[in-house]
Image (cartoon, rainbow over all chains, first blue to last red; front, side):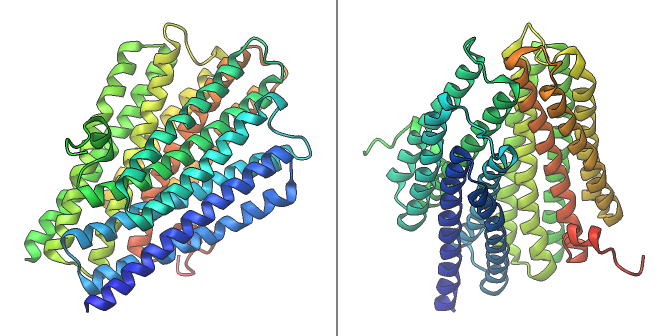
Length: 224
Length: 224
């Protein structure tokens, strides 16, 4: 019984990990499609999101089967319930990568991002992918310090998001309203994607420590 | 045992219902704050979201306790797991109402929405609140037809969302980039809020019929 339980739990963890890899990669490719106005790549990202949705349904079914058959309690139960929440975060992250790709497709053959915001969007895309890779690592290692670090790294995303707005509001802005709208939406997609990566890591922190990550950041344990 | 189970399940349903009422009302008040540039009302909405977050944590704890103590299987298990998902939808809806209120606060004492978009935003706000009220009703009645109707009603939200973009892209637009950015974000908040209301209803459909709402809409059962 315990062995079957652990096998099923492992398969759920592997599902989460695969989802994290897929959506991180999708966001990287979507960013390339956006910056290069690469229609083929954008279409690939848009089509590939179905795989993430399938994985989530699978994972949900397996979690429910596990709850029904193994009836875990205490920590084990919390792990399964938390996995369900994480899979929702990851599924949504996949949608956001898809949204970025759709922006690229919408403006093709034009580029949606003007030259003076390319560097910022590139950094947001790379950071988003890196945060998701960190979240995937935290899923395996359950390393609380790495999870808290991820939350701090996300501050840079918020900074970049603010930078975009400052740039849009600047009197020097001469790319028109359509491009401003595109950049507003793109900025929001990256920021939300990063929030979901942070949420995955925070849920691991809660599983391991029983404390919410926010409390740990403002009141770190006296022992460290 | 069964009686305790049903009491606990009822208390979870009541928690969901209360969340749906709170976030629907929050979106209504946030819209008023946005259109009237009412700072006091905006601050109230922003502060009140903590109550929704508390409700979600409570509900999650109760659901986990129920899973641990009653160890439901089959349909009962699906109900509890689905409730967890719904509570996440409703918590996020509360965040979105809060975002609308924050837009109002950010631009106070100016109005964030220009005169020519007031009617559209008002309709989006009212529709959002109505969709959430419908979702709350579906939570009680488990009425599949009402749930499917809600999904159709959401088409109007998508239409309004498109209307905003068309208006922003229009050559006649003379409110500048800042206002365009604000309206882009507001439009997205309403559209996402409505999506969450639809998701709540769709989850009820799945519980009742075992079929995903999308499939029912495209392939309605031959018997009806």
